[in-house]
Length: 312
Ligand code: BYC
Image (cartoon, rainbow, N blue to C red):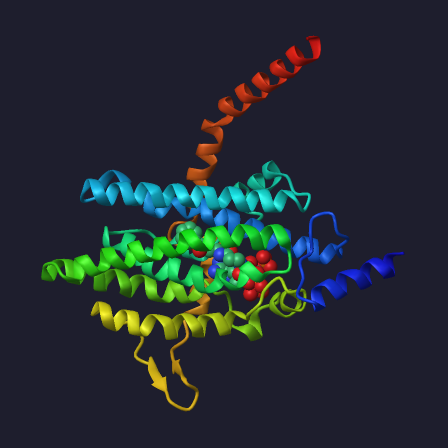
């Protein structure tokens, strides 16, 4: 019986078709998806903090409205992804507890501070740009609910990236001081953006199995290369320098060569020792405590309504 189910699963994967929530799946597949999708959902929710930091200090009403909408979109992305995870049998509460207890990760990038308004533009350009590179292939991931959530997320991410680039373009047409702010911001975010794709392939314990299951469609290094190739002409059009002395076009490979990020720094950030890890989690934990009465009131309200329906 199990062999037949396993064969069906394997043939769905081999045919690049979708696995749906009620289909049989190996326990490892389910666990890997819960790990990746939950980490992705947590990243969206924690990712609201660095930019949310600037909402009250936006330089104009227009910029404030744009930033508010963007940060709100991230909350929506988190919710689609938590819902996708629920179809795998993990409750939202359980996932949320794992985030605030440090048992599940979120993207390293959000443990870096946002020090100027130019960072809002740089996050849009580089961080959302890296997210798009990583997430467009995930629209074809083998698990149906995750792939469908990604389609909608990618459409919104593409707007996010453009708003960031447009903000930086505007600043680059401004004063020398504004141009310097953009360059300083790009210098800080370039390497952490490259780290978003995860460790190099030969140090990535999950890539091979995730590729075999069709959860991931490209390796970490393939996506990092794509991102570098995409960013170089964008940096030139913007008039900023990318802070990598090894960055140059390689005619033979048809790609840019580039330097390696500081992988020790990456490991430290992932283990909880980045500049803002403690602050990000403390903020989330506080939000959870502050919202406890709202959850309790909603549960009571729902229970009362149910009783009313029963007695009718
Ligand atoms: N940060 O074997 P590997 C966004 C972990 S949201 C922290 O290569 P995998 C956005 C990895 O989890 C951005 N941890 O893993 C939001 C694993 O640890 P565990 C998030 C990282 O899963 C708001 C270990 O290192 N995007 O863009 O095959 C505003 C070994 O790695 C990181 C997603 O989550 C990292 N950077 O590949 C703006 C996309 N990298 O779990 C923007 C979906 C690796 O075994 N996720 N680790 O303890 C993925 O595509 C993959 O999970 C990754 C990692 C490429 C990230």
